[in-house]
Length: 532
Ligand SMILES: NC(=O)C1=CN([C@@H]2O[C@H](COP(=O)(O)OP(=O)(O)OC[C@H]3O[C@@H](n4cnc5c(N)ncnc54)[C@H](O)[C@@H]3O)[C@@H](O)[C@H]2O)[C@H](O)CC1
Ligand SMILES: [K+]
Image 1 (tube, rainbow, N blue to C red):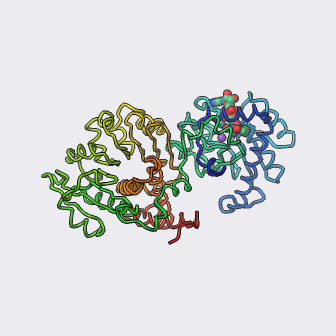
Image 2 (cartoon, rainbow, N blue to C red):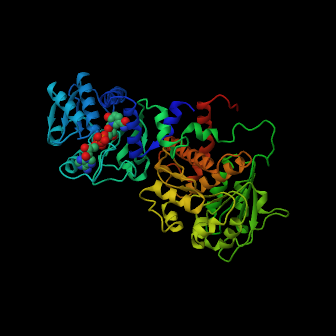
Image 3 (cartoon, helix red, strand yellow):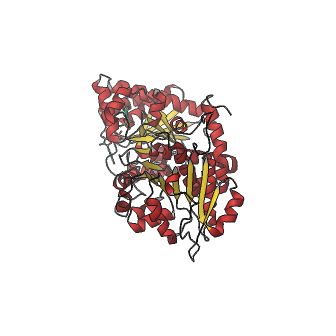
């Protein structure tokens, strides 16, 4: 794996970043030299951004940049940026309300003032700035921000001007993304060296804006020395996601070699869920698709999914599947994967018992999760031998794991605990979907769209994931990697659909039509090894 690819996947906590940094310093790199290098790269990036984006940053002789400087090395970075932008002809002013500062930061402040950059103690005096650089705190923030800094940050936020945060928006917890007191609402974040975990947590996203990484050549040996070879937390990136797709297919194959997926979904009350799950399964390219639904849904399913084998099952009085009535000579072990849950209703309880006993990889979603929660998640899953993937949103997560950490706060901690205790792969849905395996590795999906916050989009994911699992069954690819790929593919389809149709135009049915469309674009732009 090349440097760029590895760096784009790595995610660190504050402590890990400190440890990596200490190795660099122990190796002989002077602290001041590193700050100079990093801040030089930040200044270059800001200058390019200003030149590139003239609608956002209009050229004007009075263009003024306000630089917020904290007491630590985040403030030191900001001062080097201030000096560089000043020498490159920009008008800059500094806000630094701290009397105690780290030595290097103090030296840079002294020099900045000596060359004529004015340092203000009140942020109000920067009110006419067109752009702000936030260098108040980086990964050294230790406690909630208090006054006068809190009031200054709130004032800055009220101006609604462009703000570029250095490393991370000041006030965010580096690991959990929690707002500590108050936080800068940045429009852009230039994360330094390696992605900080907090930037990938849902609760941080209001403050992060567009995030990008500034690579300052951290030696790979230092990264591996602290994080290990396998990395504990990874961003899902395009190259790894595409590498687990069943593409290209072998030239000689047949439908059963390309996986047989069984979907179990729907009820008289929720027929749409079954349909969307089926369409998601179809888009996965799976060789054979069987869908078990209540008998009364059979005709509508056949009409919409003519290539699938629709299995009409006896129904309860309420219209749920009463019993799985598989074709003759078929039992659950004939399938390569099963996905179960969307639209089932809790009345389908006996069905879940049956699929849990199967020896086939199983995806549980929606009512499949609700029924599992009723059974007792952890003791029930501990009995299973084959892999299980749970795909809850935060509400379902709470029902499944009532005693674990809150999935609305430190989502990474919550999903890790859930996977460890249930021995399942857990995919916690959200703006930054988080996936954990029982061994503690976590995958975070760094790109998505609020357009996917819509009824039915989860059903599409369930079908898609089931189809990918079925196709991978003979390939020895870890279930968690396939789960990460499904989350990535689903989100990318949403992003493309939102670009073409706005965030309001991505209903779940439309989403299914973008799955192949986005793949075509991504695969073609990545490699020429696929031929169509
Ligand atoms: N990672 C790297 O290799 C590099 C990082 N750089 C930059 O340095 C910061 C981290 O610097 P550090 O000095 O450790 O921390 P901070 O700048 O975030 O500030 C710590 C400073 O603030 C005090 N403090 C903490 N919390 C509060 C609070 N709530 N209120 C008031 N004061 C607080 C604390 O006591 C410290 O004095 C990193 O983010 C990068 O921007 C290097 O420049 C390049 C290499
Ligand atoms: K900052």
